[in-house]
Image 1 (cartoon, rainbow over the protein chains, first blue to last red):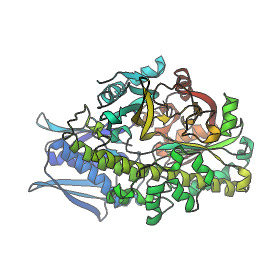
Image 2: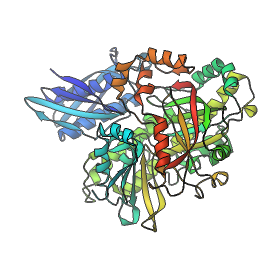
Image 3: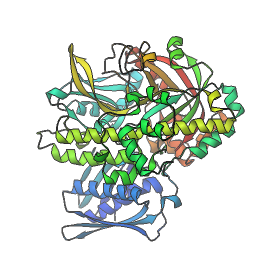
Image 4: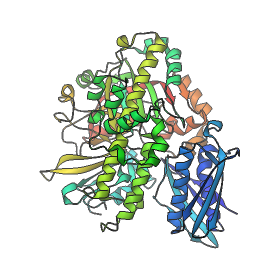
Length: 135
Length: 456
């Protein structure tokens, strides 16, 4: 079962994430990132789908989150649910949610995913990630 | 480390910086290739990402010095603009609700789009900054003269802004954003340096308007794009850094030139953004008070960036050198005589705007001769408490009630988010201003007290 916790960062914000598998870790990190901004988001038929190539885990985490952040703003989607699955030589990311006009901000908008202190690695019997966001 | 780290702070301010990882970040910045003199940190230093917030680093361009997007930040050319006015505090209070309601209506904020949707104007703005906004009917000619870089960063290339950045933030021109961005109505509470205050147009008891915002999603995406490119290019340039957020390349490299051209275009977006918001603020004051715009005398005091890298000439060990000066959460603070200043301010020094929190105060400082950190000073009070802690301390509703009971009118984009920016989440801005003065970074001119807050 995947889980995440908010990091107490002085100026910005971030997450630590734990999951059994890498796709679950990526899903949880992405959902957590948007949860910091929007809290619970109702599901609608709005969605974003894209694939990312396989690459080192830390780069993969960065690319999934950065791509979602860009698409969510460019395509006006407050993301509520994210599913990541392994497909061939990469990963398929599908995010669903609602228009930002229909949700209320519960935290400051995230400007960017940062490389500062970025971790994505196997730890104990599962996977661990740490990511700081600029707000 | 190629150079030492130097932090300008009192014991109290240093203690709060030492509680998180800000000092480690000062040390990390000292590893940048070509860095000269020191990795500096201003009195409002706090933990950032890559650079500390309040970090200043200059690299020697001719010696292969680097440019690092992390030394600018995602919100390229985020900065502060201050307008003066002929209104007294009593005048404002007499029309307070009308003015605040007009500001509430005219200042787009939060996640929403900006007031400007024209793609043609956007491209012009990326190339020419506030000059393009002026030609489109916003602001006044004098505004340009009172803006750092005259509201137009040199070397901008609109074509270096990615389609992704345009799609993300192109529609946000003329908007405040959210987080710590704000428009604040203030009153000049105390003048410390009457001569400088007079030159800046500041009179004790007069109302001012301060605007804090940047380049919105367009800048955020531009930084993201170039960090990725630089991260991949570093090995080719034989560069390694202790934090990937400090990714950098030589200023003169193809990647370095490309970043600086894109950064300047994003900076132009920010200069124009604040220029347009100031125009809207003037219109709001006129509509809300019923006083003619010409009688309000809402002239621009100054506009300064606090997230920018610029090639400037400074003396290093007595020799003038072209340096790429990164200011990440730090304000340019040029002293008297500098030819970058408008003629009527050249004898006084550059106005340096240091916003505090929405419940306490802000400061106007002035640049002084002999600044020890490449003409830089603090950019704000600096956070002392995380957003999460701040939200746990008081609810947004309570923060609003506290502010209003203190005579501060509030128009929040989100009541819940007010608590993250509550006064108790910030350091003492009076202490930051005092340390700036004692350290020879800048001198105090006037203290501003908030009367009304429009938050994202």
